[in-house]
Image 1 (cartoon, helix red, strand yellow):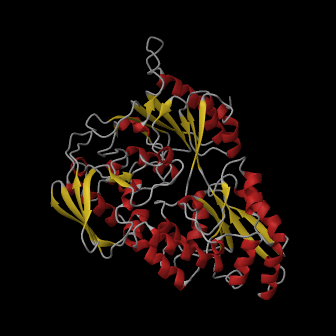
Image 2 (cartoon, helix red, strand yellow):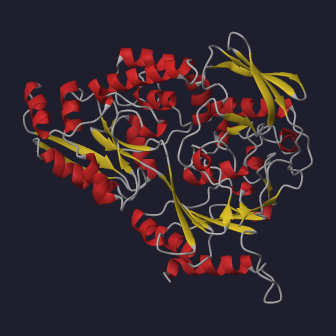
Image 3 (cartoon, one colour):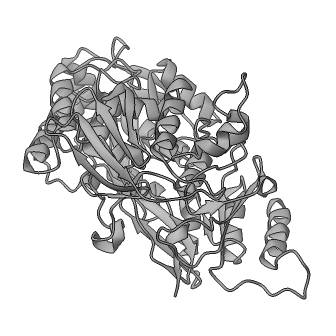
Length: 534
């Protein structure tokens, strides 16, 4: 066993035995679910988002108003993504839209937090006001730019009824509330711990989950950056499976996470390398699940660059990329080559004009027509985003683009902070990135990076027609009319590339066998509280 895992394994073995020595029995399989992740965040506050660890924990804490309705989908959403009109209430009992689509009236279920406080509309308003006042990035982008909520969006009607106010109608109006940072907080409990210097209780919320979801914990159960133990919220009345305790443990090394899983010291390990997933497939005690995902790996070309901003050059680079060869060489049978400008995960029959082609000769012709001779570009990559495979992809891109006269210099940035800073500052020529939509929907995917109206379009790409069509997609409910608009947007982007997509990633879950009832939401999370033995 690798030395880095020894302390973790010992701690997990003690926890599994109840920490009280040989006289205590090990819990039955499934009673305790140990979730090995890359690391624990230093804060549990949804306002302090720290990447995947915050996301993993946030979704499990629940306390959302709405959740994705996966029950009627193939394999409960594993084989097909839920759409934005397939939303069920979690803390919301019911909702209805006004005739003009600018108001959503929501009625709350009867619910109580672990502290015993009753859920009210004031908790919802306080939670949303808190995200706005603290200027929390993703939730505010979703409210202001994606769903077009009003500046002061929550109107309390009474204890169990409130309204969401919007400046314009939106197909995304409630779907955004499935994102984990919108989890409703127990404002009654938090307000007992606020100060004049800390009116939103950040110090308290950083170490106390304070939600109405399926789990709770005491202060000592959270060790910042290392471990979190959750137990059942005794007041939770929603759907519940057989797991009594959920333990998150931070293990930085993917090989050690895989080893914990293979030895039975972890129930689930996230963020493994693909060769590890491939090896785990041969373990009869482990189920390696592969589910559809809208996550994609793009090549980002800075349109502000005098050469890379030329449309012919961007199209030529796309044509020079052999996506299938990249996927076959890197992913050990997982993932798929991106075949079009819009993800295949959305299930649309896209026209040929929206699909990627591999044609080196045509790429050379386009570069010649653009007056571009031998070209050298710097490609920024990071093992933190898109992942450990970044170097392999970059080397293959280097080889493929050399065939059309483009030399690629690879510059590696070690951390997620570094690659994100380079992207957000727009300080790059070319960059390998990851697009993991917070809300898996064609509008969100079209808008987030490729719309000139988006704050995350840092690379200077502008197409007025795409902006217009994308805005129409955002206002149109799922159906034939919306699908036609998405197809039109896909064709526009193929003719005038923004992000150049290379890989369509799957959600890959490596989990110990013995549990069922996985709810495969489009965000790829486990939802451990619903799991059942057998």
